[in-house]
Length: 152
Image: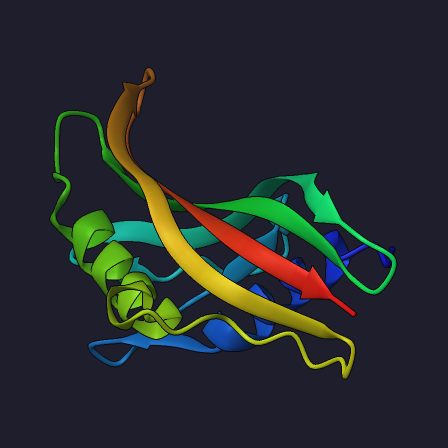
């Protein structure tokens, strides 16, 4: 079996980069925010996307092939001054991500290896939440996608 986690992560980074919405290029980070990157404003708030956690489990195997279910999460982060802003920016970014991943039409994200095929991609969770600090209100949208991966 070939480890597919890094291949799936790279497929998402390639698919989403550059991420442009209404003329604003939103940066995409791999697990951690790079402190030297300038975070742009969209709808009045600082916005960025983080490709987060992954997990993978074998679902069926035989002598000729292996199948795994792999899950990956994306975090859309929007930051505003304390008690300002709302979820609109994160929802619009989330909507565009879902359109790019194309889950609603049953198509799958592509891993470019001859012996690996993503059979299906589905959005299994989309959760909005907010945090307040001393000076900031942060609105987040977490998208979790599940993939059925076939290796032959």
